[in-house]
Image (cartoon, rainbow, N blue to C red):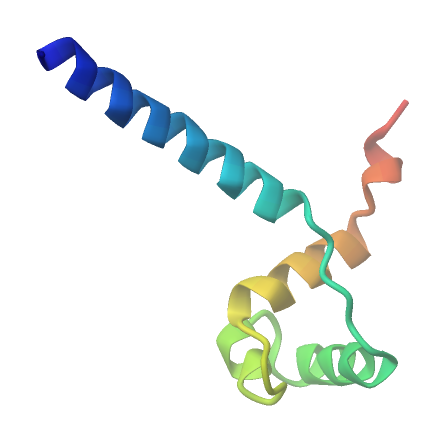
Length: 80
């Protein structure tokens, strides 16, 4: 009986990892206005992502940070 409990928790854990991986791979679309605002705000306040996100309705700090990092360090730059 204990082994069936472990397998279900293992299944849940692996499923959670897959979901998290897929969410991090999904590229979030930003409008030109949002991109412009992020750039201006970054120049003013630096990497204070929560503060920047507070100025963009419907966005959170993680989304802004991921956008900024992907903009500055595109994946193609790391490929050989």
